[in-house]
Amino acid sequence: MSRRTEVLLWGAQRLSAMVLALCVVVHLVTMILAVRSGLSGAEILGRTQGNVAWFAFYTLFVAAVSVHAPIGLRTILGETLGWRGSATNLLVSAFGIALALWGLRAVFAVFGGAAS
Amino acid sequence: MNTPGMKNDYRARNHPAYWAFIVHRVSGLLLTLFLPLHFWALGQAFHGAAGLDNFLAWTHNPLVKFAETGLVLLLAAHMAGGLRLLLIEFLDWREWQKSLLAVAAGISLVCGLAFLLNVG
Amino acid sequence: MQTLKVKVWRGTEEGAFQEFEVPRQESQTVLDVVTYVQRKCDPTLAYRFACRVGVCGSCAMTVNGRSRWTCRTHVDKVAEDGTVEIAPLRNLPVIKDLVTDMKEFFDKWAKARGRFSGSKTRKDEFERVSPESKERKRVDAGIECIGCGVCYSACDVVSWNRDYLGPAALNRAWTLVNDVRDTAQAERLAAVAGDAGCHACHTHLNCTERCPKGLSPTAGIAGLKRAVLSATLSGELAD
Image (cartoon, rainbow over all chains, first blue to last red; front, side, top):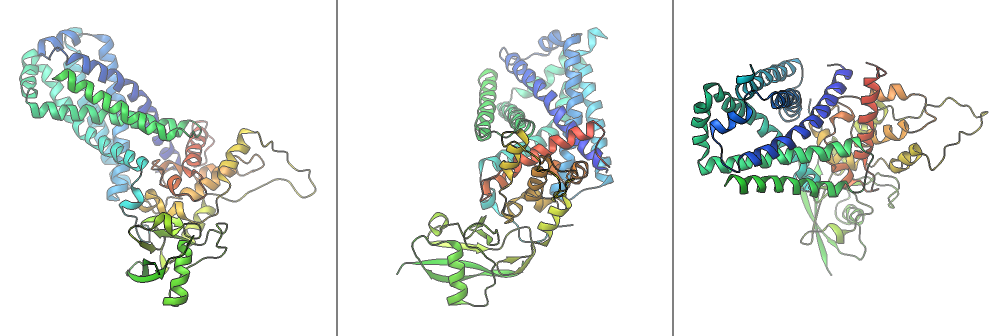
């Protein structure tokens, strides 16, 4: 992998980290507030379904984590198991794409619905 | 290709910043493994409120609540530790970088506690 | 007479600790102990030193599991239960006993483009660099490196990635990146970029914890990370 790509991956890891830091703060606060009164399916979906702002927010969240997690995983595989090179790069890329699709599916399930 | 020479043991690594690294790496890995499960659980919403309720019933198990608190703690620790790293990497060197560690640990614990108290 | 139990590494990477009893003395350094063993107990012990006063950087070893300069490490400070364990530096091939082959360590300084390139001749005026300038202050923060190899030995990323240039070489590169007279900046940034360079650093701070001169290679490496990223984004980084 070229030097430029390595540096850009590092940059993408940091940029996604900055986005994620904001997302996680919002996520943590919402989560802690939401569990106060106990969770029920109806209550959750009533709050979330068709809510465009939350839909956009969690789409961004999923996108950022799908960039962040595979890059981190790639580093761990290289340093811990000595897996370096194109096979590992392919593996973590596939993981990133799968994570993004799987995450978007969840976003649609929770926030789609009435809006769609 | 392995680096030649003898290797360090725990004695060389026993300092706060190294512990912070361990926490960051382990939490990052566990969160990555957890995410697909989390997305699967949220996907139950495709089956409407009943689908979610089925899943939520399972989470009333105290053991699951304990694990959830652990996850909140991992998430908060990974975020706070990550912010510390961003500050060190993107700002010029500060003597207070050691205090950042204490702040990061504090934030994580507060988040974990807040969740634990509210979920109870 | 009070004595100190000393375990000294014998052999190459394959080997074992050999035990000696050494008389305790006031203000005794670890290097004093090694010298005593070599002169009074076993003349075949191999170790390396030169200045004995913390200037030359030749006598670094692993003392009770931590990389240290032995000439300025007092036994009082490091002995645990009256015992000191002395081994060669980590991450470097062991030639014999306490002596490592430092070739890879210094080769990496060259790879990190750790030499100065100027454009002026002796006929030109001196360049004026204000001691108050941001660049000069950054140079000051990293320039006192004595090349002892303690940081390289303490670094986990070096252990995990043989190509990683290591803290000392990158710290050197950072002082040159901030040398306003230097003319090889593009080449240097390319040399320190990516997975074998500054971006492999995980901010363990092992180097910063152990540097006997109190430098922070981590800080310099962070500076390189930023400098290389901006060169990459502006399309100036050579591939």
